[in-house]
Image (cartoon, rainbow, N blue to C red; front, top):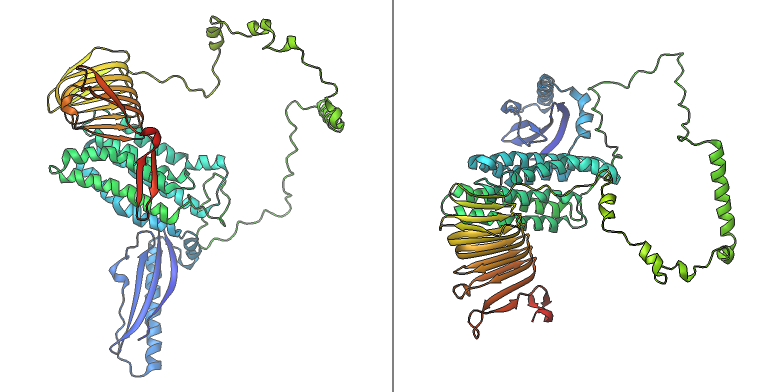
Length: 547
């Protein structure tokens, strides 16, 4: 009735490590012996022909045990031949396999992330197709590269900052490629899908965050949810594949957050007893059974060490002069308080604030500035942001796109209830929307005013500064997110509108005056809050400054 498990041998195969295990137990006077082959990387069983059953009724125990040992050796020989056909090296490969055993947090990354919701996201992205499918391939590369970085952390100590940046650069570049994919396709029909992934994929950057990478992932997930909710709103009850796609991607980021909280609570865990990381790829393991490299032929002396390199331009005279200056400095320091005895007194005529002539001579003339600015820029300096051609067009008869407008005060749109309006990267411009539209979004704009009649769903202001919104008709929801300075004028028909704010400041809502017709009363929205524990839960109220 006793069950025993033990390892027979460990072999190497290209790209996979096969672990052979056996177990035996008694069952109705029969000894059952199982020999199992299991891949270490995928966890799958390798071949049904690797399972054996020894069936014999025992009379003479000693005689039959000898027979069993013979048959067990035959099983082992068969497994060895199977491994040799796959490219393994027999017992000599065992050391390499043991050295390449994955760390626990890498195995769990394979199980929880690569084999979890990410797999569902990739499958559903293929079903959705279009730009979503193309972006999903970049996302897959990001998570595969993150796995390589985790393996690196499991083998090496924490490297120096310059080597750390070099090691993480491939992953950072792939994240940038996945995000740039969205920027190049702003007119895509799947723009909300692309933006959700663009905001969420930044969560992979947790590997550079310490000591709280978990909250960082949560923040990136919340930013992604802003756009994923739009996808749910557009397709819920119409296309369940799109809904499942959103759940799979949100679940991928959630799984990543749970994984990081479990294994990397305060930051990426490096191997404290591992080797020092030098920035170069580790050398390939020696072939199975190979010995150390042969010694050099006898009689040949090793080459002499290279001569010491003198610093460029350093002469013996300069070295002596430097030594003399160092000695003078030490002598001066040894004087104690007398070290300042040789300093000259600063008189009033040398002081700028007491000598008007000095103040006049220190002023830089306006005509001198271009000449000074015309000099060559230092290397690595970034120039001004590249301005693109302004865009004002109706895409697929569904979406008005207003982009890169500069100082345009005469943008007038005629819309219907099936169309949306998207305003992006505009500055010092005025947009008038006539008619009833589905929604209006203002993204990354400065000093922009928008006047519209009616909106069916919501008007949204995101990542903007100094925005004015005037509602002449009805609007059920006004959303203000990451915006500094937003003035909203409500009409009588829109007084019941819900106003949702997050990470914003200087928000004012103007409502029609009840005493003076045509006038408005301004009300500020709170920016600062106070939270207290009441014994059961946290209670949040506005601070006194907002009351």
